[in-house]
Image (tube, rainbow, N blue to C red):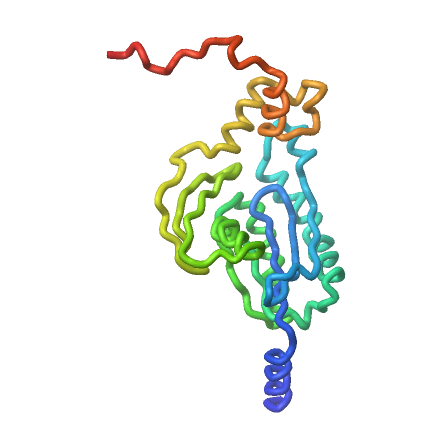
Length: 227
């Protein structure tokens, strides 16, 4: 048995390294197999966009249920595209925070089952840190670098000093830009506009603003009359 284990470890070090990544932090079920150079060998994605558009926003329990229904298919598709069998993966990396609890639980549970089944290392991923590091897959950006992250649920400014070393300079306190745009779109019922029935809130606002007249309405400066 010891000889077999030693042989397996030797093969692991000589074979090209490939990591399976799984993302379920919000409303999209994603998976990809990436090699040690950052090259994506295979990926797959299931979007819940239309379901949540019809509901007027993301409903966490619904998002969690849809992740459960699609995660196995998405992972299998990514693995098949990559040509790397699950038993030959070097590790499994999964988003563990931040995100919707129901959604994160699905990805984490599925990943840990794979980890146990194939005896592979598990890499917990902070998905905002992952966003910040994505630029290094496309460009030669050296540490440290300043990064602004703007998304549906977060907005922050940080210095990336290393792969897992970040200095947070500031962040939104209550409302992130994407969340604010979604709420404005809901209040304006933009999904009922014939041009915007399949658009997200921010996309609908941008689309309609192009044909608007920003000088037509005078907006007062908030609290400008307060002593």
